Length: 407
Ligand code: PMP
Image 1 (tube, rainbow, N blue to C red):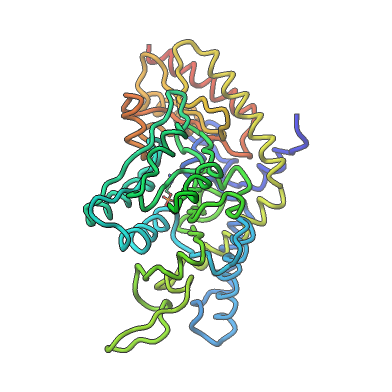
Image 2: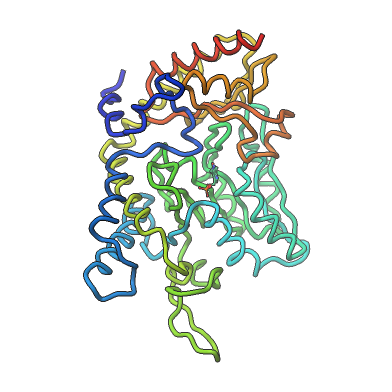
């Protein structure tokens, strides 16, 4: 019972009105990508209809408008995550590109044989594989901090692993599989005490909670637009100015230079130094609209509704005999991974789809976490503020039905 008018909100999301296989859609794959409100769709449409031109290259009015849209998204993101300066935001295609930028431009030049990068057992491959690639080049290793069976980071172990050879520590703000919220502020304090920079993967936190990078105290914060109502192919890396100033460019090309000569090229100041080539300008017009949309609802209302949904879904799933939930953290976002005894995850997901319910089955780009639990896959229902209690009930009814079919 909140003041949140979920039906009014749903009316902003055209796709939620469609049917799949003749059934009303229940979209519970939000951790994979969110649906988009018409305000975002219209911002992209308007950009191409009225303002389309390339950024920073033209003196004509359209060029100025396109640049204003792109740079406006940088301003909006900087404000949204409380960055001290807009120039600390590098616009990227998503979290993956942000992590790779940190891997190649920040860590690789610092890695010596025997050094290490610390991550955790619950990370998405985007917060593991880039580190492994650069570690292998430098003769360094990647270590992983352990988690508890309930899916919480063992903080003391993470801290113990912060040894002098660690050149970067990495953690997801929120797990895409377990929903676990990691204690970033506490980890950042421990890292800072030891002079070890902390990279935070904020992909799954941004859609659900207000983020203040200064309050968190981390060094890098990566985010992806498409999970927070914005178009695919948008994202950002926030990094402390001192780090960006010290980082060489990763991609070379147009837009990122000061002067190019065959005797040597000088590069633009951050953040443009890291933004070679033509970016997803229309997508970033959508990012600004997405932030406006979230701010118009307010995180307080969003969080209250999502909390109620998570509690309801968890309670309903717990009634089902033989259903195991993965991830029982004290603090979690509305993501529920589970398995049902005697049924394959993919079979259940396939049959659920025929009932109109979209959930994800698989390893969720988190092989090491699946290995930790000793399972090849889980089902994952991930919720958003535009989901309803009725959808949770429809999902549970469908799950009970398809389980009977598989028996
Ligand atoms: N980290 C986490 C925790 C994620 O859930 C995802 C998306 N599944 C990513 C990183 C990668 O994001 P993107 O593919 O948008 O770069």
